[in-house]
Image (cartoon, rainbow over all chains, first blue to last red; front, top):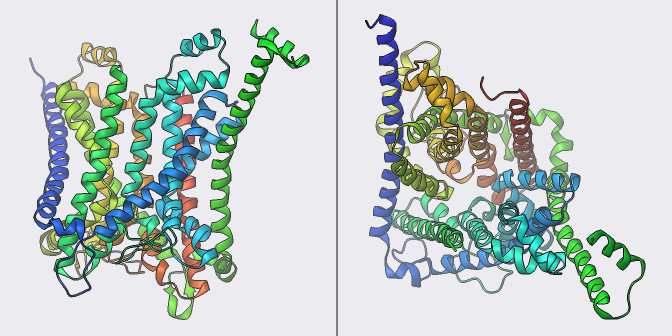
Length: 281
Length: 332
């Protein structure tokens, strides 16, 4: 009944399907093993001092990264202030006002900007902000991160605005609302959950960026006052501490890695939560 | 009706009453249009400024080395002699290693998740994998330094040298001293980083393939694997290609994770176990230390090269996707 051909096909079927299962299992377990390793190492290295103290001078053990945590938040604030409004309004243009050719160009350029490696964005911010004043600053780091926020926000804003049903716009206009009033009071509120999610995801993404900060925000072992001084950030601290030869610094790097990971993953989860809720309503 | 109202309003700007109110509102439309247009144009301006700044600030290096920059194998800051060849080589090799490892694994996992695993398990796993795609690259670098590098130095490296290293042809890739850091280590870390992208996008695409396609293939007597490999995967190949390009673009431009594990040596070596450097890792390592103007300018030209590579890759991906779509039917 079963010819060699059938047996061959059936065994191939079995072997290949098993292999896909093995691959999935291997990938998932490797990914979670390394994350588990991070959580274990970070958790055992984390202490209260990490959140409250400044880095100790080289050679002394202990100390923390309070300045880097505040620094990361300051940089994120700058990125949000500079990047989010641009992204939002450009997204509104693409979804509600845009013509054909110009919108195509803007969309293409946005994708291009999104694909530019973060280190190249760093060079751009360096020549834009650092070169003229000849010193590293929080502002330069904020500009670099702000530029990276723009394309992500544009595309998510456009996408969620387009998902708003056309008859909602028509209903508002039939009641006599002008176009911008329709957008401001009907379309944007309807899409607000999605837009907020997109913004949060954009910020979560740049929160972990290191490369564009290396030669813009640079780093600082002390508190950075105002916006014109070099400033410490968690990702850059992780990098400098991880490649340094001191065991105590390695422990701190693990702790910082865990804090950064928690920050990024929690904002991702938060964003998904907002989206799920806004869909349910 | 609304068209008629528009014409009236434009012809005779009314002075008072509801008409005037409407008119002002319409002017508001124009302002809103203009404001949003400005911000859309700002994106164009930013991007052109980016290209311009890279071009302008790499002027010194471009006039000093010309096209030879691309094939000069020397990178010597002490004698102001700079060539990008070792870094272009390193970038291509690490990305190639990453794709060779990540594409089969990622595609197989995506097939498993979309075709075999029960839907709710598959959804949970994909949710977790999506979260992994959001993990910052410096964290992968941290894990690379403290897990992958020791693993390469103590076991995996010597294992490869003693087995694959003895084969003809392929063996040349796995010979020589084993430091733990190098092209292969960077490629492995990159593979770990891009696998979530490949799985996530490919699974989405595979799930959009209509159920009838699978049923038709099965009804013709195909095994599960045959229906998957000869019907479902070809149907989804555009999207799968897209995920591979996404992964490649990320691998080419990845900076931190690579910088931390590649060993930082401006050298072209046949062995994958040798330390090297990529374009991005060189910029990250040397930018703040660049003392001379020509040194800095050469680093910025490296940035320009990296930008052009990703630009071309983006274009290629688009052409490819358009071509596959125009190529008429989705089945191969």
